[in-house]
Image (tube, rainbow, N blue to C red):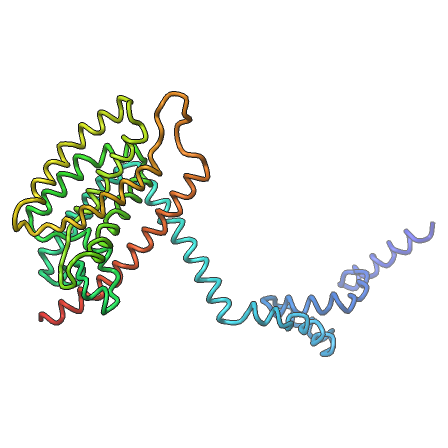
Length: 332
């Protein structure tokens, strides 16, 4: 009962003396004092905390962060690799999102058509440097290791008539092929058929031969549609596909079989065979009683193969650009 009056008396005396009465806080434990010092060292302003900690206690706490694993994780190479991986993951995610949004606005077949037309526009600006740097020259592939020449010829053309012929074929067949196979499988067939045509030309063509053009990729779309019609033979969709295909096929055969036309028919055959094989494997079955669409694992395989093919195309474009700049500098 005497505690409350005593406290009131102490508070009254301290107020009369001009300073407040506050009970003294108990001393902090040693670990808490060390943690307080570390926090003040990392950005705080409690300078008095340093006076309450022994050096041995501080060294013991800091030694916890000096383990071999911590040193490896905080080393410059590891931090650089982790940062590079994060940046690459972000760039890949952004590129995928951009491609998906672009595909919803503009079909993939129109993007490919725009790419070959834009490449021909660059050819008119840079002259023959792009042809020399990107054409399929078997001698340079075999003896100089310029393997990008298996990819880059599908974007180049030797003349305006050559470009118009392939552009018309792609403009006419592209929407049908993309509707049948889907955007990802269409792109996979187009790119791999162009590469397949160049591989056949490399195997059986003249060592000193030179070839450019998207004809192998276009013939690959024709082969893919033939594969689709074969898997769905007897249906109305397969008959409509073959009838729309026949016009473009006859046009390209007339152009390619002319005497002294300079057309690389090996590239046409290689592209057609590649497209037919891919078409048989990727074409959906539209007969009654069959499930429509691909299974989930099939769609994942197609997406993975498409991404890998796009990566190979991008790497080949890097070597192609370097060689174009080098040829351009020599011509000056």
